[in-house]
Length: 282
Image (tube, rainbow, N blue to C red; front, side, top):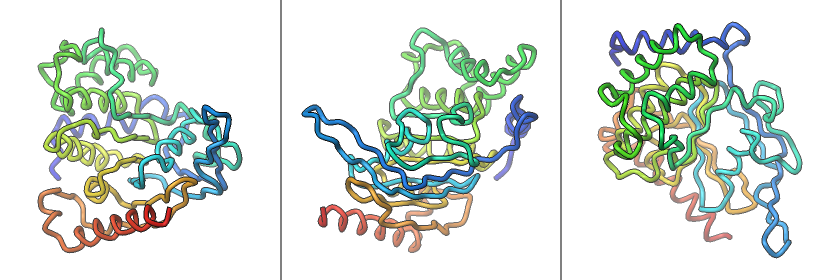
């Protein structure tokens, strides 16, 4: 992949963000014997996951797939500290997940842009959270807007943007904050197929430059195979890992070309078979 001048500048800016001098960049994740129980409306407990174990090395792009309601999103929330584990631990580089929130960025299916703020001001939220020096903030926002192909839309409001552009702004805010770990909960699930494919390419372009750890939840098996280094398939509740598979497809990847690859087709078929089998066994 050819890196343009603006991309190279942004890569340098992100890799030398203010927090770097205070910590070593990493992002190793460990779930150990994690159990999560929710209370139902009738007072009964719903066991979402039990004795869940998973290690994710720094810089890996891991996708989580499985039946609806199996606990995919819950695992992201445990890792971010939004949902406490009833038993077991989730750690980032050896520290409990609840103590590492500043190292995590979360992106949801529906964007969380401030409706009264412009593209520039929404991205600036990440800049402020990252404590970027005021004299560098404007240049960093400019670099991000150029990198995400949003030039000319700096002063547009969210309601004036397409769904794909809104998600690009969300990505910009995430990059501005520059976390070690990206938690992405079906971030492109509400987009049409063409826009979803374009956003997938955009995400891979970003990831290839900065290699942060990504944990990506999706119902789209083809999307998962296209993006990921590794995919885990969860069982219905209480969720267990039914399949843990490395995706040994050459990078950089083009979704249209991949669909012609026998290896790609085999990965997709294998994952679908595992999900179908798990649902029949429920």
